[in-house]
Amino acid sequence: MKTISFYDTKPYDRDYMLAAAGAAELTWRFHEFRLTAETAATAAGSDAVCVFVNDKLDRDCLQQLAANGVRHAALRCAGFNQVDLAAAKEFGIAITRVPAYSPHAVAEHSVALLLTLNRKIHRAHNRVREFNFSLAGLVGFDLHGKTVGIIGTGKIGRCTAQIFRGFGCHVLAYDPAPSVEWGSENQIGYSSLDDVLAQSDILSLHLPLTKDTHHLLNGRSLAQMKRGAYLVNTSRGKLVDTTALIEVLKNGHLGGVALDVYEEEEGIFFEDHSEHGLLEDDELSRLLSFPNVLVTSHQAFLTKEALDEIARVTVTNLRHHMTEQPFLDSSVL
Ligand code: NAI
Image (cartoon, rainbow, N blue to C red):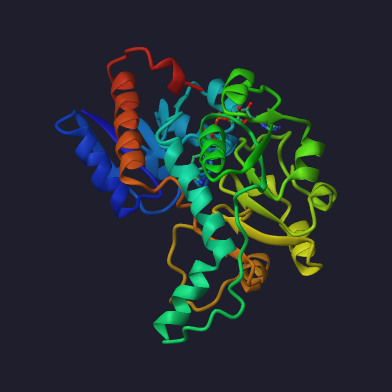
């Protein structure tokens, strides 16, 4: 029997993971808190840890895990910017992830955010519930004929681009490793980042967070965007410099911003802070005060299909480690 310490547990994680594990020889220790250097001691006696996007597997944390006998960290997500991979290698901890669970889940949420924001569905919903049936202030724009810029045409970026093509949008993409054949099959052209920034009415980010992509959208690049353009970020918060974003919202340069991720979301997103009635993060509070900003709490992945697949692949990765079988190539980092 192998023991898995499971961090940042939500009720749906537990349900889907236990269903996927079935009668597998795994003992689960579900923790609601996140795994960080401060909490790493709680993994003592475990063979593996299972973590999500806001756990923090830095050098200090990984060193403690190794000292406590942990040999595998199974990420139940695709992104892996929360892990110091070099340190994991040094301490002999295998890192696996779920490289693709449902790109459709994230792509569809990106488009849902944009449609909600543009057509002001969230505001309309609140109004009619108070029997206010006025349309004042609810004017949106047609997506048909608009230019959508997709930054990063991996699995999610390609799905998102194709949905926008279905709306009759022109899609322009930037990716240092372009999928040229896919682009020509879908009438999607690649261009430089500068060009995509300058031409897009809507810009949607679908690239990983790395040292090179940190603050890809900063004061300079945000200023390159068309006046009145909409920005959608369902990838990672740190791709966007929040201070600069607030500036372009204040001066009216951007028409709207839809975010499923936020630069400093750790410790805020996924939690209920409503009882305190106070948000200590001033920049998030400022963002939430703009009528043309829509924020969801990193929920783009949250569909039944994605949760099933995340649980299935994570349990497979844990089993493979347990039985010393090689990992699926696509899961290993
Ligand atoms: P992927 O690995 O299939 O594609 C990423 C693409 O980005 C690749 O084509 C790569 O060449 C490109 N890229 C790398 N550096 C770039 C740069 N500097 N500029 C433009 N493109 C660049 O990844 P996938 O599955 O499409 O996921 C994309 C991102 O979505 C993930 O890295 C993750 O951060 C985020 N994500 C968010 C979720 C959510 O719930 N909000 C859930 C799952 C993923």
